[in-house]
Image (spheres, helix red, strand yellow):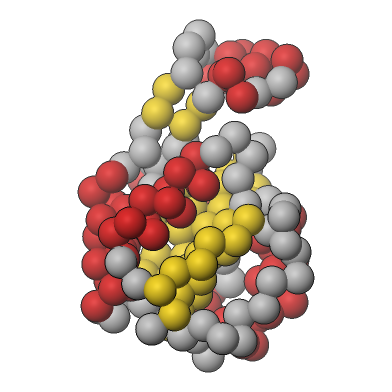
Amino acid sequence: MKTIIIFESLHGSTEKCANKLMELINDDITIVRLQENENVSIDDYDKVIIGGSIHMGVIQNRIEDFIKKNHNQLAEKKLGMYLCCMEEGETAQIQFNKAYPEELRKKALATGIFGGEFNLKKMNFFEKRFTRKATGIRSSVSKINEEEIRKFALRMREGIS
């Protein structure tokens, strides 16, 4: 089966997760960053995985636009959706639900909240300042959840919902 992972990443966390999924799913996989190809076609793929991250409480516009443009076609595919965010528990789930349409969430083979990172080295001055003030962190932090990525990959690989 052919799989495509479509993602957008501001500081690299979502891309890191896309690459990890590619390793774990072990399928004929194409990875596309929307910033580099906003007009990607999903026609030739059996499975579609969409990944984005939360910044200031919302997912990237490119992810939203892609889903709106391809909603009907996505509803017909074997679908997975993941989110990178630093929130946990109910707050992370609320962000996930806000980021992805309910119809697609309900039919997806896999959904996942993979945690996130604050990579200060990749942030501009204003992002660093805001992040430090809002969170109190003084150095880069990673909360990527490898186990959640493995579970997601297994569901996508085997079609287990």
